[in-house]
Image 1 (cartoon, one colour):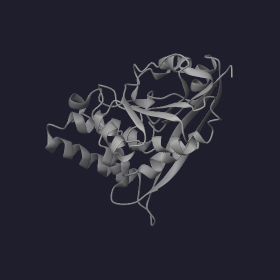
Image 2 (cartoon, rainbow, N blue to C red):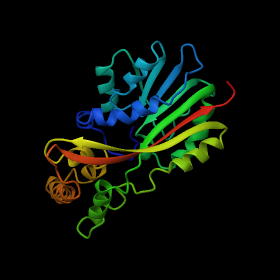
Image 3 (cartoon, rainbow, N blue to C red):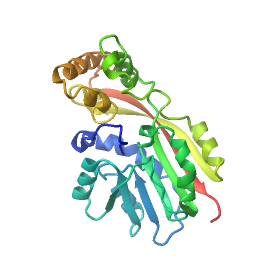
Amino acid sequence: MTTSAVPGWDPAQYLRHADHRARPFVDLLARVPDLPGDPPVVADLGCGPGNVTALLADRWPGARITGYDNSPAMLARGRADHPELAFAEADARTWTPAPGSHDLIVSNATLQWVPGHVDRFPDWIAALAPGGTFAFQVPGNFDAPSHRLMRELADSARWRDRLAGALRHDDAVHTPEAYLAHLTALGCTVDAWETTYVHLLTGEDPVLDWVKGTGLRPVLAALDADPEAREAFIDDYRTALREAYPTGRYGTPFPFRRVFAVACKGGR
């Protein structure tokens, strides 16, 4: 899901690494307990192109599932690829469903784009029926070379004036302990953890290809009107990534930390 301040998404670029991106969502769903509703009402907040929203229908056949996003391109791709599902426009910064209206609110790699997202937790927990669940995962790799090198390059003398404030920093997400504290304070039973996946990527400059679909988008948007400058930034960033992520015999290992939380509302 994007916010109004974040540049538009390219569904095709995002889906180039769909299998790797979907794995954390599968692991998240494995920790979600049975839902109280019959049929359950489910919201996928920041559904993107709908590829993981479809996994919700596999887990809960017959559920009333809606994927929410505020990227028109992502919603269009979701509706085209998954006509059996419902999609609607919404922004995670303001989306506030009615109290008790949902059995599951789930969010996959979205909340890092929402500054102050823990402040939204009370509304979302209130929107759960007794026994309902709020579950999410966010990337916890903002200190990784892929993101640190991007920020350092953007803050260099050549680019500082043009890219100041464009990129998120390492406080875009919180620790599992912090999420646990926020959600237990709202009366939930919480399972919080982190996992580092080591994706083996293939192809030429695969880490660059990965971040073009996500974290690099603000830079690409900021330099969109100046293709020469955009390519110059990409060239410098590509060189740094090749050194940080050397290609081995079978591909390029790409460690990626993720942070998870599953919060179950009491009272069922």
